[in-house]
Image (tube, rainbow, N blue to C red; front, side, top):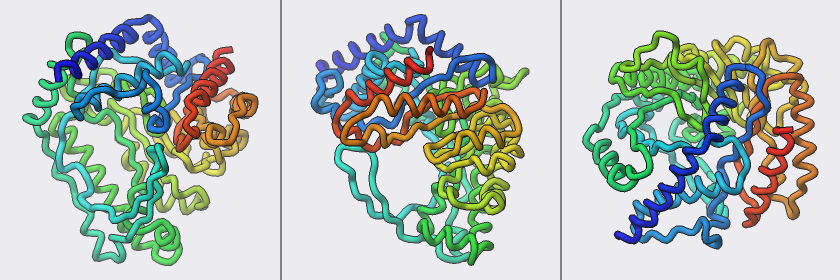
Length: 411
């Protein structure tokens, strides 16, 4: 155990050294300018890497701790260091080890019945869902939250990490820092994907009833977070919604009370990914009208994930304080820019399929980035490579993509 602790302490010291470098503050300032729609070159982030495909074969990533709890810390530190050393991007390395407050009773209280099929060393699984919501009587299964803060469990976590890491890193508890309402990601797990889409046409009242219940539950959770004073300052977050960093001078709100942060001091957002082929009218009726009720309580908002939004920019203009929009691999970038009613950060998601092909083509990756920039027509841009299900065990592809993207975006 003492050897394990020595390993972790050494890695933590290396992370602290990285975090102290001036480049980290430069990155923070870059994100602030971007998120405030000021002049700033496009920012870059990579996430959802299939580490399991290669970390067992690389000394730099291979974990050696025997204790499971220490091994989890070791893995996180090794990945942070690997990213900082080998993946040129704008991820901010932080000198604080954030410990989530232990909060109970905040979920919907309804389990998912599914079958999962693993995909090799990837974090991605294939899923088959069995319906647990089949008629109106079932909707009461969606619980209204009864949030409570487990101070004892949180303090135990703080003591553990403080004892382990405080020689190098600041250890701090944190509560929720953003509110991302991905109701449809959850709904289809309870109904089945095909049935949910069919019910938009044949049982609209059923879908409306589910969305009403989920929205009320989510809003009640936000209210209870505020009442229990569990929310935290929104920085630093390397991820907002399905995009990237949260740094901005616009949050928290001017005149905020640091002893009682509200949802208006934080980022919000929403996504109905399953609505890729749903019309704008149905998107607005079955998703956006509910999502807005969450987002209107937040200071800035992010919208979308994998669903293409180029034909729906007019309805997104109704989202209060919308700042970032996900521009997925299936989105027509030029149409999205032409249909935009105001300035946004376009949160580009280049296709991760480039990393899964038989041979990685850096030229195609560069052409894709340049094409997206040209079609964005002056919108502020961030580029997020995510949803990487496989790189065929070849980490050099990840490095090459980052090097290519960073070179283009910093020209």
